[in-house]
Amino acid sequence: MLRVGVTGGIGSGKSSVSRRLGELGAHVVDADAVAREVVEPGEPTLQRIRERFGDAVTRADGSLDRAALAAIVFPDRDALDALDAITGPAIAERVAAQRSAGPRDGVSVYDMPLLVERGLWVHEHLAVVVEADAETRVRRLVEQRGLQEEDARHRIAAQATDAQRRAVADVVLDNSGTQEDLVRAVDALWSQRLQPYAANLVSSTRSRRPDRAADCVVEPRPDWESRAERVVARLAAALGPTGVVTEVSHVGSTSVPGLLAKDVLDVQVGVHRLDDVTRGDVRAAFADAGYVFSHGIHSDTPHPHGADPAAWLKQFLGGCDPGNHVHVHVREHGSAGWRFALLFRDWLRHEPAERDAYAAEKRRLLALHSTTSDYVVAKEPWFEGAWQRANTWAERTGWRPR
Image 1 (tube, rainbow, N blue to C red):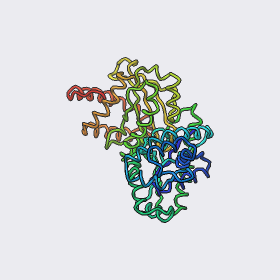
Image 2: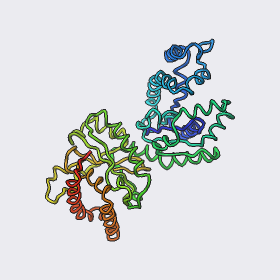
Image 3: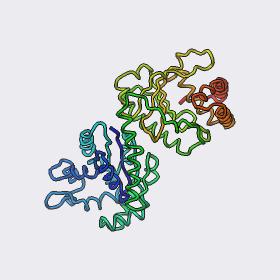
Image 4: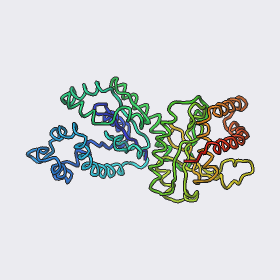
């Protein structure tokens, strides 16, 4: 199923977003609701909280006094961390059970305030961040939840910053306007990205290739690096348990600042042995992360001309996210193809004149060829010379792949 993490600072309106996604058909698991369940009277988690923070955090009837606990933990980082260490495992176990009960071909939404703080976003296909400025959030907490202003500010300060959330956000929803504005934004997200993404995951027996719009060469985009960082982090998290991966790296034209490219991220996955990729657990890990193997693309063009093609073998996958087109190139660590992908990136990053020359060659070829597939083939003679110049640069500078 498509996994979507919804988060945002307290008072931002993330619960409104999750509620609307539920109305549209998503299976929603609310971390706050689960957190309340695991500290109900009789639950072992509540007993551990009482042992750590004292009898003052429970009422006479044995239930948790949330206000008393909040007054202790929110102003004190160490106390908050101690509480998280107690409640976190219990919440995670129950969340996993609830999410697994959802439809396998649907959209699973995890409404989680600490998605960023705990690094859990890497296990979601998409992270949706709901934003509102701090003063708006304070006002909402005071007016709608009855909190004291000082308490509201303590709670906001204890969470991730807006910048930290944006760094992992695939989607940012602005909730500074009306409720109607927010609903329209959620509905658009559902129809334009979540439903197509979920459908692509279900149809994972075929390769997902970028739409034609993403096959066009465009001017450099400022979000390429941040988008790639999220892809790299998610693939590393998904593939790490298999033990076959040596590194995951952003490569290709979008990894070179200032270089025009197709709006398609190229990511290289280095593996100990290319044959390992045929293992069932490895293929399952790729599929679970949202990447589908493509048939018929199994090598790069060898360089220099006449080189052993066996050193340029690879496996190729396409991403299922219609809002972030990704090509994954799986190459054996130490192979010529693996090395050149890293060398080419670093060479162009450190040699602006070569980057500009490559951009000029791209523009020249685009003017001659009506399709990007012809354009890709036409670049190969330039790459032959580039391979030689890049290797000369590597020898001169002492470059090593890393």
